Length: 269
Picture 1 (cartoon, one colour):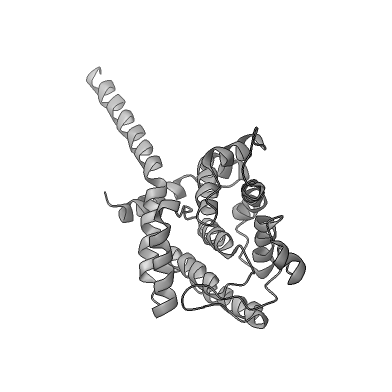
Picture 2 (cartoon, helix red, strand yellow; picture 1 turned 45 degrees about the vertical axis):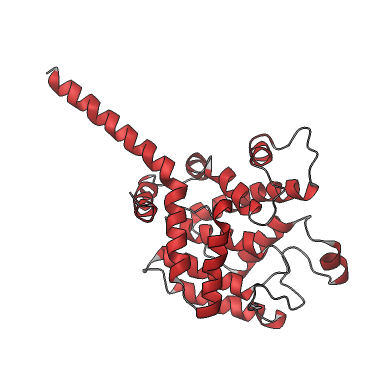
């Protein structure tokens, strides 16, 4: 089965979980949250390791650590962000400017460099105060336009409520990165927002795998150049299939074993 098709099956499986509590969410995202934090962090920081990420999520600390302190801050922040969002996911709280700013505050706390923090007077949880551009086409809203541009984006995605939720989440991510509302941390926040939007609409979240980041960047660039979303949409659908491939295989294995047991029972009647 193609990865593209697997995500469709993952949607059905996810919705069968009937998640109503944070305990349900913890159960079904037990391993996902660690893998998401690792890959999302690793895309921009090669010092992040899977071992350290797992230690932080499972034990709250890393023993004998000798690497970059920033890597630990970033992964601890990923854990704190998940804890902050999970109740809001269950309650299906809509995406808002306040939510976006708080996600950014949590994910970037303790990681802003001296120039941004002291010289530019920018803080985690606050929109950029200076004009930053990103990519070869130098995209990014002017600092004074960020809030209006994000409000327009949130109004746009609200119209997708009865449409293709995956496409809406991908558009949210692409436009968020295009607006580039913060001085730093836009990628991590954008990937988190995409998954938040998916989950409040009862769709399974997606990991963007570090080893696929060049294809990811190329798809974002395609959107910047041509306002063409299909490349990023197909990429995310494939990443969704890759994310849930193992879970789907396990679910199919359980079905086969149950079917085998039923056949054994019929034979002995």
